[in-house]
Length: 389
Ligand code: HEM
Image (cartoon, rainbow, N blue to C red; front, side, top):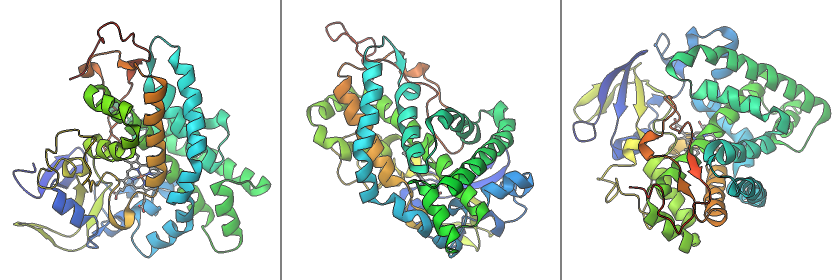
């Protein structure tokens, strides 16, 4: 696609969309005001949420992720102070503690799924800490999030009930926080609401839901993708074992190489958009192919090569512009800790199946493995069962 054109009109099951594959276009369009994130600017389109049942639609419209300025600016500014780099750095000791506990439990096992035993609980614990969700409720949240974000083709009917379950749960949680207060982000947002400054009741619900949907399986899934990339590139894994100071830069390279968010959420043209020789009319749906942009040889030398030494790395795995991932500092801290701690605790980690036997969740938004079966402590004196590609 990158070679043959700058804008491709394709038919998806629900209707036509324009796919933009080249880095320069993706990067520029992420900041282009002619592309709206608000489906209300393109009513009647097959992808808009206007056909959803009112109690579902009410929760998924007009969130930070699908509004334009000035609505977007107001919503984002109310939570942005909780997601700064310094806030994420302050959480690092807690991330390390959770990672160490999980990996200590795994080290003695013969075989485990690194996603369900490590990446998922690590990510969910950090989000639950942030939002004040008790440990007993985390499995439910995890299940509903997966049902909404990564439903396999025949599971799409589970989305509305999962949204309703989430709504019911979060309504109760917000009522409890309103009554008892707490140190978490939801309590802080409620306090602002009561000062008359902040979010309305519905906006509070939407915000809580958005943070869970945007923050959980993107990060858990990515830790899986990153570990798979390292397990199938043993030379790169070895480099990081011997030089752990390279981990932050390696995380950027792993995000470029195989991020868990391969395409942006939908954007709508509000005016004619000329891209090279193609003109996209107003009211059309556009998807920017982040994964393709991140492998564009015009931008990155040897783009298909995983190289943890790569430094000039302006990838778009977290997007760009005003909708740049709000949780990027937190995600980076979690991923860096996850990789560093795994390398330290499991020096002889090996894949337990052939890479080709792994299967991926079906989702337009999140690219993640269903499972990552590993042998935590493979005996290094025998040949690794699967030495990688
Ligand atoms: C590896 C993990 C993650 C990846 C790859 C990722 C990727 C992205 C991308 C590409 C966008 C922009 C989408 C677009 O412009 O259409 C985005 C937005 C967003 N992300 Fe993340 N994300 C990750 C983790 C997180 C976490 C941990 C949180 C919060 C706890 C989070 C919260 C958000 C929010 C709220 C937005 C919407 C921001 C806005 O529209 O202003 N993300 N993310």
